[in-house]
Length: 285
Image (cartoon, rainbow, N blue to C red; front, side):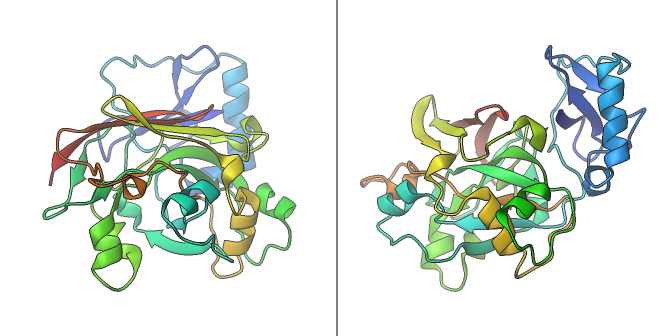
């Protein structure tokens, strides 16, 4: 299933995109797309049954904002330097263990919402990423198979980053990762049954129409299953938590000088095969 949330910010309603591309209203069946729903197999079953029976009313998509496909996100866990080609382009050795950092849940915005370039920013960068959405409480998972069984679905994430704040201002990466609007998510949450192999997905990103990133999750240093298993050794993952699993080569940081960092007026588009496409205009904060 392709689950999404539509409407003005803070007042989104749950919806489903059916196989014919028609937007369907879920608000008569479930209150929202969130962690409790993803953990409720009976509720998900009701959605499937209603969709299969053609019982869901259509929504007029014209002019309707698409919000983040998930409400009530508890935490956004991020994995850094998780693609072999990205490690090569930035001149670092592949990490021996996953690099883990966090984004605050309030950085998450819709897939077509405006992204704000922070004040005094000179190195705002792009990163297309596969987001993993947790569907069952995960702690101390023992195997990769067990890890995948705890995944509810997948989505496109844009891990926008400010490299000067992240790398040159001391401390952790968090200052360059948690600026407002720095995690567009969606347009859909695609349930795991529609993604048979998360290591066989293509990722692409364009800036002002120019292709910048063209990669595949096959290049991940640590697979989706290993990332979920590994993270569960250090923290409990709850339904509705999100893991951003890293970005392939092609970011501005890895380009020759002068590096083409983002400015107000730039337009970024990104997509992952089967998971949909995003588009953001950048403006000054």
